[in-house]
Length: 251
Ligand SMILES: [Zn+2]
View 1 (cartoon, rainbow, N blue to C red):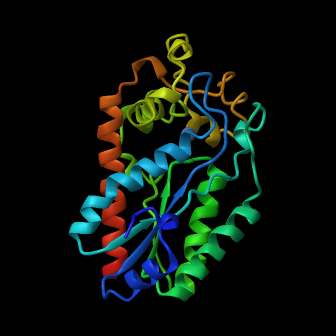
View 2: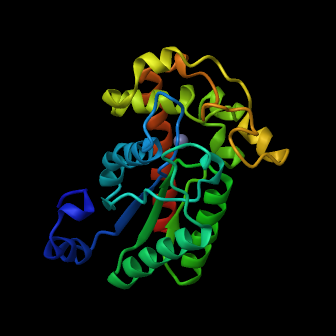
């Protein structure tokens, strides 16, 4: 069995579902969205996929068959809507896709859908919470480590906690860890510190990155990023994902 869900044949998935071990489908949730001048539009997809991959060994040890679904690469992303390349879809459209994926997995006998999300646009997070609740009401177990909740946010880096964390040190470190060839190093070095907090700007009613004080679609400290920090953050995010899945499966 290949952990990449879509690389399996249907008989391989059937065999996993009949193996007696709980089968969990991890859905990496990202976006197609501007991330500064130095990171690619698929930054959040890369990060969510990385989190899922880092979780695999511990899930296997816990006796769980974990598959990583094809990534959900479109999401509500209106904050970045003023920048070329951003594709924002409605909350309703995103929620319909997510809940239909969950329904389909539930009907096949998957024990749990796990949401591995790194796209923290408030409209996206709200949509994910609502979709998770709807699927739980249908009887599907849903694991959703929500890093915007204080308890989990505390386990991540200082920049993340400050809220100045879009395409800054936190995300740049993660992309440098897993896809360094996609980081424009010259632009990264030219990206001056931007300590404006997105979460504070959200609370004050800002509706766009420009209004929040991010004229180049980044917040934080891209020049401080290192692949080592990225590795550590992947471990922390994967740890939260594993805990959320094992609790959901046991519950
Ligand atoms: Zn991002």
